[in-house]
Image 1 (cartoon, one colour):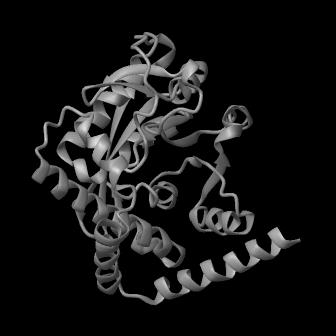
Image 2 (cartoon, rainbow, N blue to C red):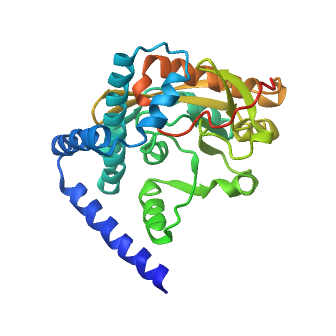
Length: 297
């Protein structure tokens, strides 16, 4: 009973914040975001140690001044993404298509015409959150995005509603295999962010990434090979605050014919290339290298 009341009160507070964000013009939103970035970096110092250690473990070869500059830019990216996520509750179709634009949607059209499902992989870069909104607007696929449900079931329900407003279905990551099986008879676009640290290290693919042995999720490659679904990488570039352009690139046309781990390796190479170009756009605040194992591949 107490837990239900707490979740209900949290839901009311969440709705209040969403309502405030909804009425803010984008220029005012980004003024607020700049203030939040300052709070994150200078007052709260949100996960500063984790971010600093992550940067120090890479081969980006940054000196102290460069690290602090990148960390400051990261906090602005983080605060932008958080507020943009709340703003998505009130964004129109036209606004989403204008601000999260896919530059080459025709790459997906060919698969849809051939009645092929596709696995679209990306990283936690720039604003990946709007992808669940824009994917259904730039393609005719049945769109499914995998996500980790929130503990607060009432807020989780609100988030699922917001992210599915334009045709995307959100499915828990724990039911990934069942989701693939349930949708095998219709052309489906599966959205998967594959750069988080895997929970089950024993099944992870170990690759050299940013100069470090790194564990990668095996799921995207496993399902691609099992179903022979093409794998496409989405690069998300921030053109300016509030405007993003996505470029799609096919990583593998025939997964069933590919060498083991090759799809994961191609994904890691694309993600690493992106991070080297736009380092502040990646989610440095998660403990990416918490697993310390030797290379298996």
